[in-house]
Image (cartoon, rainbow, N blue to C red; front, side, top):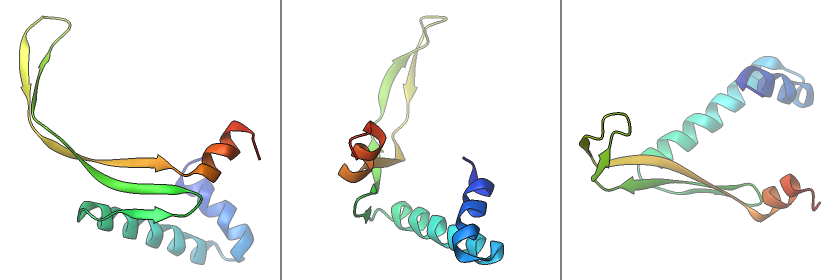
Length: 92
């Protein structure tokens, strides 16, 4: 499911495609900006989003065997909640 399909599915419940698109955009923008600031977003039953820091490291190019330095970076991290995990596993 892509963003357009998500908006379509939500618009069936809200009755308006415009309202659904605004809701999806607002949720995504809020999660992204909050995590980018370093705060955690936890949605009970669904999961949590947070910022993870990866330290600098040395890696190896498997094709050439040369070592390269990979700089430190920050990445988004998602951890599924128990209800979500159980639904995917078919336990509910």
